[in-house]
Image (cartoon, rainbow, N blue to C red; front, side):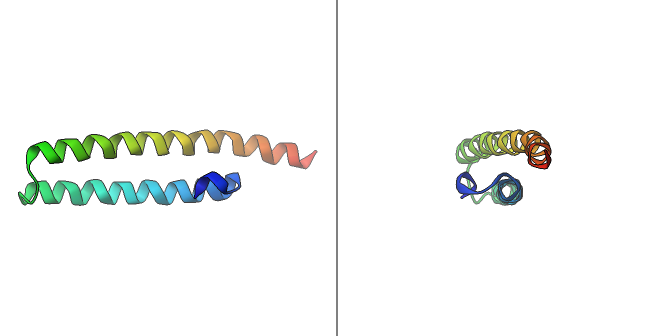
Length: 76
């Protein structure tokens, strides 16, 4: 979804995605503590969720660094 948005909207969408990833990680940990999933599955999903969070976070950070540049170019 964020791929096709303008930069300011992308930042909002990516921030929402990061919040959802955090919620996923929280409920994943709860499921593991309640023994609803075993250690192997917990580790597998946790690693993927962490990687996804890093990727989306990096994308958002990149968009935040580009936003001031785009705004200043538009003013000239």
